[in-house]
Length: 148
Image (tube, rainbow, N blue to C red):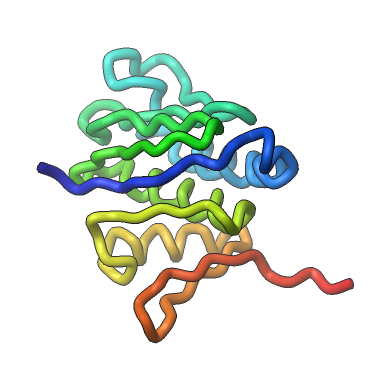
């Protein structure tokens, strides 16, 4: 067993515009952590993949655990990070997707107010993503309202 995050990916054909809007933020998150990320732990020289249909990365040199692999096809998936350094990136990407695709649902073995999630929640503020835990303990994620 290990520390794991779970989700059902958004379907590209239903959320094309939202996914396209989220990509610059997701790419920025990946770029900000490029020193610890790669495509796969056994190919540390290969860059992560972020496009409209696939987000794939792992930590390199001991920073990762299982590969984060999300295809935009509506499938259920998970990523066991075991609290390794790239966990903040996994959580930040999940938060970014939720901000742009409100129907996207994910869960985690960790509570959203634990140290790892707090770091990710603080991290996404840089990209204009707001997070809050409701009185019922549910994580709420949103983008600021841009007016009319």
